[in-house]
Image 1: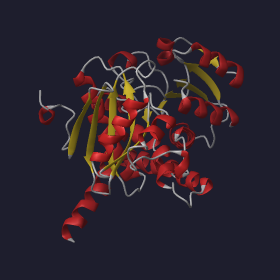
Image 2: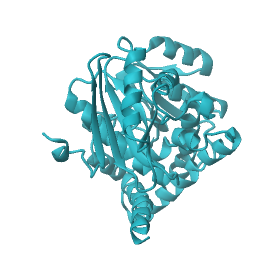
Image 3: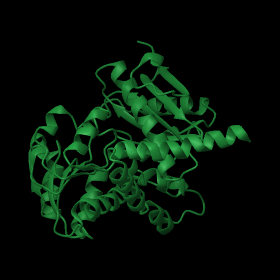
Length: 351
């Protein structure tokens, strides 16, 4: 299978396969669309079972970034990168400097930031080889996790207002899957606002900490899908809404930070048919990239987080469009995003 015939290929502008034998780096950089501006997207390091699995992730994630930036109103395009490898055992300065050189070779068409398996410190190492990095302390915005979590929190509030007709999350129950940086910060925002938490993670230390810190109820990883709650918040990896999980899912709302939560588009349609309100992932998890868009010498966290808070209003518009047209929320979001980045393309062509 070639990239052009790959089922996740969506008119991507550029796909770079990066190989550095000295450091052991094997990576893929995917640039989906730059109509609104140069691509920005995080780098994920994961022990993919195959090269095709890594390519699938890069293609899906980069497409999501195009739609995410368009709906956030940013002058940025969509890109993403993945490094094939175990983040616990394969990290090295040489590997990240090699990745920085590959990013630099694209001449600014793509800027890199942190994602699953990659820390801000890793990005700083890449920055020794390229200026095209984002989300580092030197640039003001720093770790995007708190802002991503804040955006998800605001998105959950919008979903609760739409589906449950409640003005706040106080007293509602949220099942949080994944207690990494974003999941943890989300739990804090929710707990501070009076929500009840059910949590799970493969890291039992993190689970125990959440139980102690937030009064959360802990469940086994596979049990999170079937718990009785008002909101299911996936904050780990993608494809968690699938044929198997839909058999047991009981929540009226799905709203979390994970990318590519729908295993296939038909699963979003099935949520819609069942009356489960889905907050499209690339809309609700845009807080990190919005925060990064403010970085620079004049970075102001209060202003940046006020911009992140507008995710609430964007989702409210999408929910209303979905209700008025009868289409699932993910389709309503796609249409709104496409209006924005395709309109820019047409305007540029006319000029």
